[in-house]
Amino acid sequence: MRTRSLVSAAVSAALGAALLAAPALAYGADGGTSGQDPAATATTNPTADPTSTDTPTSASSGTPSDTPSPSSPPIGEPSDTPTPADPTPSDPPSGGPTPAPSSSAPADGTGAPVFGNVGSDPSDAGFLTVAVSSDSAVTEVSADLTELRGANPATVAVTGFTLVSGTPQDGVWRSPRMSQLPSYGSYDVTVSAQDSDGDSTSSAHATTVDVEPKPVFADRSISPAVLDVEHTHVTLSGRISLFDPITGDTSPLAGKQLSVVAGNGFSAVTAADGSYAIDVAPKLNGLNATSVPVFLSFWIANPDGTSTYVLVDSKTLPVVVSPSRIRLDHSSVRIKFGAKASSSGVVEYLYDGTWRPAKGVALDMAYYAKATSGADGRFTLTDPYIPYDDSTFTVETSLDSYLADPYLTASHAQFKVDVINRTNICFCSSWIDEYSDLHIQGSMSASNGKVPPNRKLYVQQSADGKTGWKSLGWFTTKSDGTFNLDGYVSVPKGYWRLYSAGSSDYQPGYSNSVHFNRTATRITGFNAGPEPVRKGHTVTTTGTLQRLSGTKWVAFGKQRVYIVFQAKGKKSWTQLGSVKADSHGHFTARFTAKQDGTWVGVYLASGSYVDAESYHDYVDVR
Image (cartoon, rainbow, N blue to C red; front, side, top):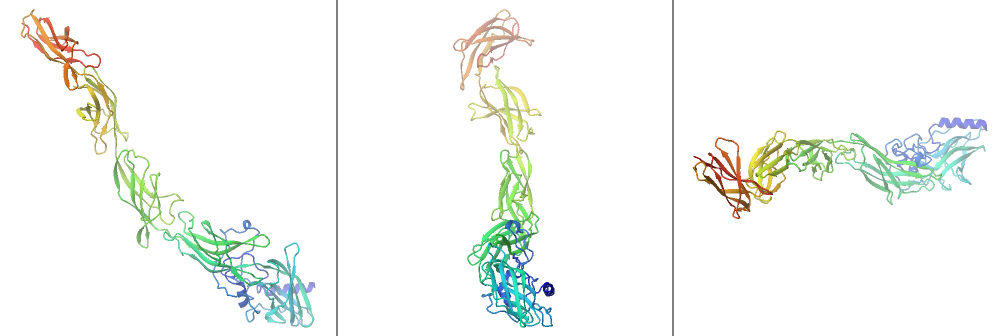
């Protein structure tokens, strides 16, 4: 027996790749067996070269987590092969290419049969093939298949092998479909053979075969051929069936969850007829991606609790990036300080030599303004913050990797904003004194932090602070915008404010208003006489003291009026005396004439009144 085992090994080596020793458990969409009905292939080519692309190339895994992920699927481009309506042959195939039979049997008529390759039919795991040679015609081939898993593994006898290639003395034998197998799984195979002169032999553990359902694909498609700005979605379609090697039946793989990897992960479920139609938007790997690999796969559960990764279809799609541009509705804009800067326009892309509106493009302006273009490519961006001075704004397609359109080049456009600055005037400190002088103190600036070049300010007055504002005069601030001055007002009662007329770059400005309630007074009809008068004689001074009530002057009685005198050629004034006006405001005071000079009546205000000074009357003393 030891010698015969060595001979068997030599025969196996001589057959080489003629038959598969054992099928693989992972199914790749590699353009071979996984894309066609295994039984049908077995009928037309039952002894195909096991190393061809019609044989699955991936091995089974332990669990889904231990198997290659969809990001690194089996290598090979999928292709579809039509599946016959009835993939199970009713008779053993004949006439097709077969492996070369063994020629190692003894020629002296004393040798027992010698086995070559033993394994599953390379095109259909439901059949077992055995290469055997002997010194006389082989008359019978059989096998025992024992389950490799389970508490009580069953052994099934397989008989009825028929010669499918070669000669009875040196040929390849195939079993009928092993429909008597109790379940899917792995089986240990022992083969036996007998020749015509009565010699027989058997080979225990000749091989191990896996009998598992096998996916069959049809009508597979991944489109479009190229991804670009007008083709950003990928459609995967096809139909998946499951071939049962025990029964030879093919049935739709319905309700099976499929996984799509195209930059991101997606999933879908097959329909009742095993078909699928999946639409996904691939996630490009960065803004400079040149291609996107697309994989469609699923997992098959094995009887031993493991799972096998099945690649249904795969394709690498080139990525074409189109030029883009932004056309703004304006290149510059003038706004008043306090308004927000806005820009509108259209974003477009170049496709087949034509600029077209770009829909759904994310745009930024000044970091904080964001918008998305509409179906017509139009957009409007408004900066949420108020610009404080003239500036240039940039509108650009978003650089955010999550928002940017990977099928368009980045683009930008600029526009200028001319801010008409606000003029700020502070009427910080003010009052009206008893002489009816308005004291004005404060500063002038602009919203851009500068002093407006036109520093002229007008003093305005209104009776009610709402209407009837009239300009009383103007002054110019210092170079730093500050001011501190006094000015006489004829009516010391009412409201005052300051006003700047503005310029092309500065808005007109108004200060806060202030209110004062002093009452104007006056001395009318003042006279000193007679004139001329003799020295030592009496000079009589008369007049009437009045106050302003509304718009009318009325008597201001019971108030003291002072008579002052300035001698001719002198600069100083001398108070000569005082007199109290009667209830009608009239007053009379007499003094001795001593020298030429000027006589004046003066009221010194108290409370909310202002001083009054009469007409200056010169008297010649002789």
